[in-house]
Image (tube, rainbow over all chains, first blue to last red; front, side):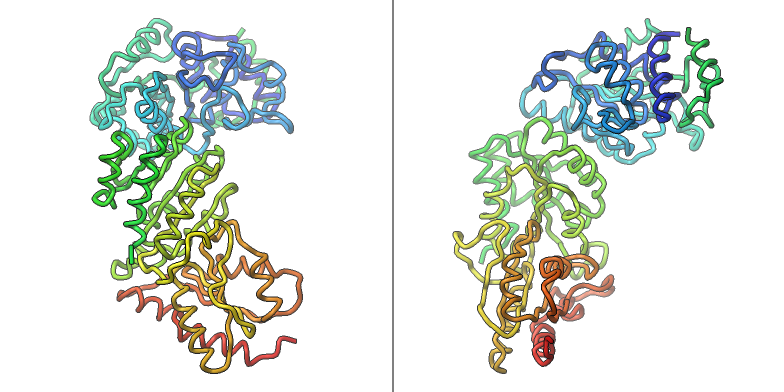
Length: 256
Length: 309
């Protein structure tokens, strides 16, 4: 397993605030860490640098995974994480771009961040800006029609500066088990690559494809919801559950 | 007289040639008349497809990158269908953009309820940082859009297919200011957008009966010019409100809020009370909804016949 330390931070802030989606965050935290640590071009001193790459967490409920990565790279402080979901804090149960530097989109309602990202990528083409756009969607979020509306546009506009990362952790399959997501993205005209989203080598190989396609790129990550501790893995009651004291200790031991 | 949709195309061309940030995105309507803009401003016109909610989200992405988006399609699809995108992607994210509709109320009278839209003005007004314009003539659209399109706001322009026929001087058109189209002292008639035509017609017939109506014309629904309404009501203490909006929340509520706490007055609302089934011309549907000169004159005469106190 990658990133035990980041997962411990997720458990710490969620338990303290009594708010958060631990399994969703565990599912994507390895990917977000790679994106910020190895892929994105940004200026830590200037969040609004016009030529930066942008990461957009379309499945906003996984934001604890984003916050701990921003802290790791010095873009948020420990104090800011200490007030997560509390009065006076800037970090909430869904990310808010108007209050948090380096958060590029206010998401929460599913199916918004992705078309917003398509707009940013198209705007960068219009303005001839070099910034790349990486957006992360959930597989359940892919039930939303706006995902496919705008995926269609992105392919037709040949947005080679746009990458979608699909958190394919089978959440959507609970409701609609017939769901070949890689085939869907291919059918919509996206170059598509499937990989293990918890394996360092496969993550590196997947993101090396960014910038190599002549149109938009879909990286479909075969993830495990709640990956990192047996307690949180899989689907069901842990989706939005806050650990009690015993569960907190169990999680911290599993992640030590 | 130039129609508002043609003026929209002309205004885009004029501003687009001066402002490289202006980008126009349409949902498969008006692409023919916007070709001059498309040719003059290459790479800044998109007939993006029939996907209105996503079109609004994409426009928000444009705005985030410093462009000035203009998003255009038919009112029920641009506003009612896409309201969550307007609310979250623009409102919540504090982004600015321009939304231009046709087909407000029942301008597409013969197409049935799927193409009617009575709540657009109210919905947009609910969003913090929004401005709502209902121009009733081409010159109003040109003046209001040119003045406001770069304002840090969600700007909504509801273009009527039925101009009211009055040519106001450009210098008399100011965003957020009501125009007094006719002075009077017995009763106030306040009309939104195209209904000015019926309001003025009613005022003429009332005058023949010895009732002098003051006609206030509203092209800007938000911000609302409460002061002019109050000044008129201080004289008349009676008002008929005429609006091609849902009766549940629109100009009538704005008038009542303006007057709140100032004592007694008599009021009547002429608005759209229910889904309109069936077909006909725009004028037919106005008549069925009570939005005609005759209904306005009748309501005004009834109010004048009552003592205020």
